[in-house]
Amino acid sequence: DGVVLDLTYLQPGDEILPRHIEDAEAKLGGYRIKARDIVLLRTDAAKFRTESRYLTDHPGMTREAVYHLLDRGVMVMGIDAIGFDPPVAKMFERKKFWEAHRVMLEREYYHLENLCNLHEIPAPYHSFTVSVLPVKWRGASAAPVRAVAIVGAD
View 1 (tube, rainbow, N blue to C red):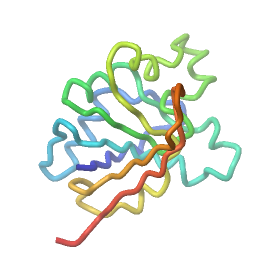
View 2 (cartoon, rainbow, N blue to C red):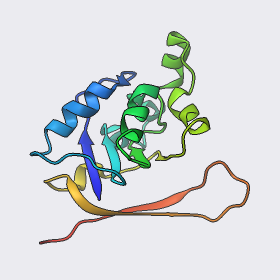
View 3 (cartoon, rainbow, N blue to C red):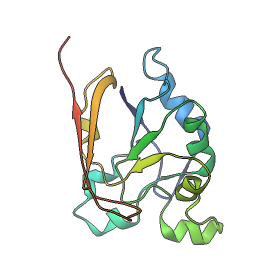
């Protein structure tokens, strides 16, 4: 199932921590993230994807937050920002470089970046289908995808 976590209250450059994941989950009306859910992190950064600030003004995942989701059985997660980690300038400030990305060297998981229209996914923000269709490239560490949320009426 797809799950949208509302992190729109975070500021540009903020680190997404496990407590932010827990706080957002608590707003899902009792739904608990389960193994194999696809977790989509809504920051609303994509709303300004045509502006230069899209490159710099977004929160990003920490190593701890990625592990928090992995330990719950999540294998795919995505964000509506240009990058999965905090902005590059913040990485240099904190001397913490690509920590969320580097989790892939230790644990298998996949993350999506540059998602858009997460604000269009309606309540209850969970239990919808997510289809992620990557381009088939050999030997690549990343590929463009067509990510689609399929939301239907009961």
